[in-house]
Length: 170
Image (tube, rainbow, N blue to C red; front, side, top):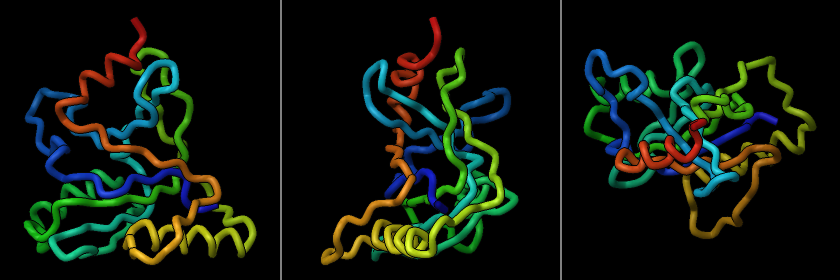
């Protein structure tokens, strides 16, 4: 299937876009699944590849994709390009699956982007329908599910240390 992970309506204000020199690892698009150990998982989606949607005051504003650059770089660019100030939230739909968490950081790395296998045409069509429904959010639509994707919730800036401490090895 195409979509392996996704995040809906993340707030741009909750991302530390410019942490400053010497502060390695602070620019992240940190997402989580679950809230408590042992089920909690964290992943950094800065290098995710796929499709994203920017939202402004009146709904979906811009749709883009990531190929060579990661999601984080593409979004960061939109803070200063001709889209600056016109969006404050974003959703993303990633083609890279998450792997098992690294032992010491507790962060799930992303699997490298491989040749895509769309599976059956019926499943690919269903994934595209789910993407559009989740991205646009029409009120009359059924809650469609992706065939193999899992949703990740944005970790807010003031919660970052809290969740990192939950997953890191002692």
